Length: 211
Length: 260
Image (cartoon, rainbow over all chains, first blue to last red; front, side, top):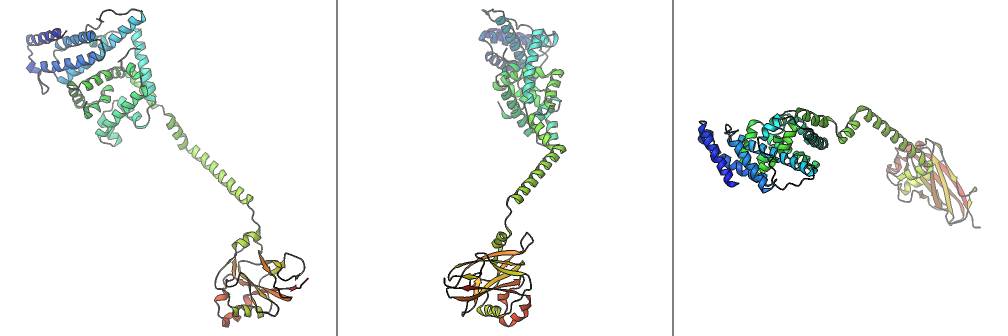
């Protein structure tokens, strides 16, 4: 698997060069694109290992790197590569959980690693119309979140309300007449409060676990 | 996970970060595995809240007042304040009425409790002068023996009297035993005249006084001295006493002490 990853990086670099890009062209203070990709790969692999079996984690990482070096080769900024890495891990993780849940419901025990995560999860997430099961899944997660949010009080309630209305932290700080760093701290504590209200259900709401 | 970047995580889930904040957070996650893992975790919520309908649903729940806010709003509405004010006023009036009706003290008790020596004690010259003055009533006053109907008593026998007079006033009871020198019987020797305030009932003040009859047989005299409340007899010199005689009420009561 590690060999496959190195090979992917090498192929990606060559493909970049063939299109007229060079790693130096997308370099910034975080390093060259290859350097950034290597760090993103390490983050993705560790995040996947924390959630999946070693084999599935390895496959997920390879797929993510292939996507980043081929389909998203035009993305050069380090923060955008991190954002893509986060998104790919999250979506593939959810897809794997859902497939696993379906298998369990059907009484089928997987003997081999799940391979349903190939392809671009970002494209699937934005393109295909969701199936009834996915819709029900989202409804259940949302319902839990709404129930917990309704139990917030005072400042936490107001900050979450303003955020969902589209206000930035600077705008919220201005409205409350407090420094923006204070609002960052309040918001973080309120988020922890929300997670505490959800308790064990937070993993399901965040998509980290299947029901 | 750095402190500053950690505080931006909740903003990532609701897409509330400005571009600079988002870049700061994602750059930090490039070398911070815990932060990267947290972002993966939060991405599920972010995906959930990206749907405008879902946001509206959460916002609708947040617009509903909490239980505490409903209770506070109920207390803050004007009608509630008026209701509570009325209940408090009724309660106060009921308590005040109960207090007034439950403890009707007798006028005499109130007067006795209120009487206290005030001013300068009378000297023997003052007492002698007061005893030699003729009886006179500037204000209504009287002495009544409550212990027995007649005025014949044995030596050393308790003598229960009831003094009645118009208050406020300064009052003293002098005694003149047969063949002896006069003295102040009530308040005790060496004390000033007792100041008795006006009873709240509006009637005359009633002051009970208990003495003991002298051992010597014969006719003895008690003199009730009632002075206006603003007149401190003990402070006057003997020479100036005649000038205030017309303001005094002097009532005598005589009794017989005989051996059975």
